Amino acid sequence: MKIKNNIILEANGLFHIYESKAEDGNVVALRGINVAIVEGEAVAVVGPSGSGKSTLLKSLGGLMKPSAGNVSLAGKRMTRLTGKELVELRQKTISFIFQDSNLLPHMNALDNVAQPLRHQGITPRVARAKAQKLLDRLGVGDRSRGLPEQLSGGEQQRVAIARALITDPKLILADEPTGALDPITSREVLKLFSDLNKDFDVAFLLVTHNREVASFCDRSLELREGRFIAQHGNDVDISDLSESRELIIDDTGTVTLPPDVLLKVGGPGRFEIPVNEKDKIHLERVENEKIEININKKFILSPICPACFHKYSESATQLCPECGSSRPMVESNN
Ligand SMILES: Nc1ncnc2c1ncn2[C@@H]1O[C@H](COP(=O)(O)OP(=O)(O)OP(=O)(O)O)[C@@H](O)[C@H]1O
Ligand SMILES: [Mg+2]
Image (cartoon, rainbow, N blue to C red):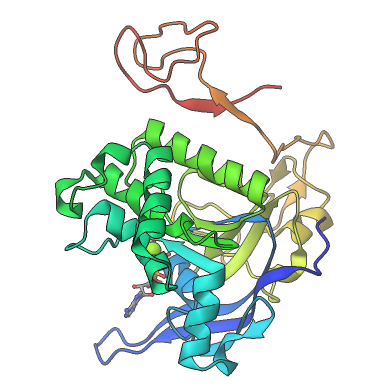
């Protein structure tokens, strides 16, 4: 477990209520979130639509003020900073990547990427040179003079990622960063994130539905109805989970046990429900043979094309030479 003396972002007891005069009333989007992210750590937040992921990310990044609770960035409580101090600290420390790229429509790609450095008073020439380098690295260098509306969704997203990287942030908060990308570009962006994480110790908090993206992270936190209900991975800290040991069973009947509860019941395995009762489940272990769940499964390129069953053998190509389908990632067996 990483030592928690270099926490970059920490939240305690976050609640958020969206107030509404409409008939359906107020929405409680966050219900007591605690989380700490240390320097260089990559954390995924996963959860169904409406579970509060974007609200959490915006609250953590100081883009909105939660109804209650504290967020500290680089050891400083955000609510205690003046507007100007908060903006400065944020500019130095964090960058955001949103699902829709949020580029300024009247500026070309190069100036969109250079803009955060211009805000810091860096000359246009120096800022543009760095911007061009990043665009080249992300494979959109030749589109640098294009306006956002002249770029494809995937190109816009790569420009937005370049813009997020130009300030050399310590932490990147990203909401479905690869949501608008095809699998190949998405993998390239992930590789870039992974390099930044390994080589420059950049921390990531990524909201994602994508298993490949989550598997790049050190741990993943599962959000349901505004609470963290489970955590998966290497570096699990139970104190990040909500205090109440509550389970939510979704419409499909799926339950996720918090890791400490799972440990208490003796770990994964097969369970029987001997009697059916309303509002209660009684589980009895039927076998002692435990099922190994490997949370650290590695993903590899699929050896066989799922569409036409072409065998890739040693090739590392990402497109099927026979039918042109993109090659998926699958869990490795070793
Ligand atoms: N501005 C708002 N006003 C009122 N309610 C809101 C507002 N923004 C979000 N909500 C509600 O708060 C809850 C959490 O929303 P949030 O956008 O954080 O979910 P999410 O997990 O990001 O979902 P998705 O995966 O669909 O992006 C939802 O019930 C949503 O309807
Ligand atoms: Mg969202």
